Image 1: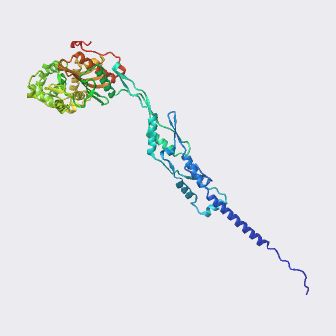
Image 2: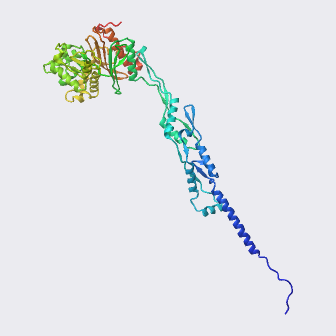
Image 3: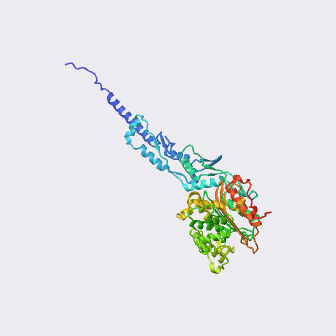
Length: 522
């Protein structure tokens, strides 16, 4: 048997080595990839927004600092043309970065580690993340900041001022004021924005205001002082369109004005004939015919201010007894809210006070010294406020059927109230009407004859609005208060009031006094 000589040759395990190399390479690649993926997970995802701020690929510490820097930057605020910077720190603003980072981690690690690693290996883009802003600040501090801005930059409109030289008013000036609540909402939104942190504050433009009743009150007092009137003046005005009222009771006996906060009782005089007329109409069955006895009594009482005709009306009201009629008128006035008005005897009656005494809150205050004592007529008294009440009821009754019709639905009609107005419009005398243009209707009843008191009470139908004005003057004197003093004062109070309601008519000529009064004013 033939046997070959020589060495045995051993083959190199190429396949085994190659396999081992590949396994080693794969292991190295896996470890490297895992290390890269783990490092990637320590950084913010490339597409992450925190509160609208891009923080992708940043370490957490840098992401936190960047978000806090953005929201810590000032908000630029404009008040009209004035630029103002608001530092968020001024309102205690704080960004809760930790809560936002925690939420970002939750969103980013919602899947398993290996599924994320698989996406990493295949270079699949990560999902985009947007973490809502978590921020807090003090609304109270922001409101305080806005209030300070308003205090610094607001220009409120200038109010109208009394103009004594024209018995009128100087117009006010326009202005502008910060709408703090609307501006608060805008600044709040800007504090929560990462960009466009600019705000135009809401500023309201205000037109020049007209005079108000308080301005008219100041003008009347200024005028009284300029006339050196040393007495007591009471004026009541009702704006019949707006329902606003002015009440002025001022004592100037010491020179400086002393405002009185109580109802001053005055002698009623002929102004009481307004209430007597109303009670007389309660007894009538509709408007009296022209030429009838009832019409004559009304005409002589309200137009000519006759006392005899007034007493006949009281007797008619009292069914033949003037004292009973006076009592009825008083009861009616009290029922209508004229709590400080009464009449206890007919005109020119000399019955002593001990037999016919009547007490009201205003009269009691005068007697006990808690209010001005004008030494009013014990037999008939009223106040400017009470006269305004009954005129207001007549006006609304005549205009719409309210007022007296509502108070006495079965006794007074709108048609009768219209006749009451017509009768008072025929009165040619008076003081308030002297301050009005000739074509302005006025329904009024004047009153004087006492040694120290003058009065007039009117409904004025002016172009700028209907109003009621009642005015009383009293001087603490034992002599006759001259008409040359009293008439111009009440007339000019009327002028000022008309100018208030009709500022575009201040230069229109006024009626002046009825020459038949024989009052010569220098």
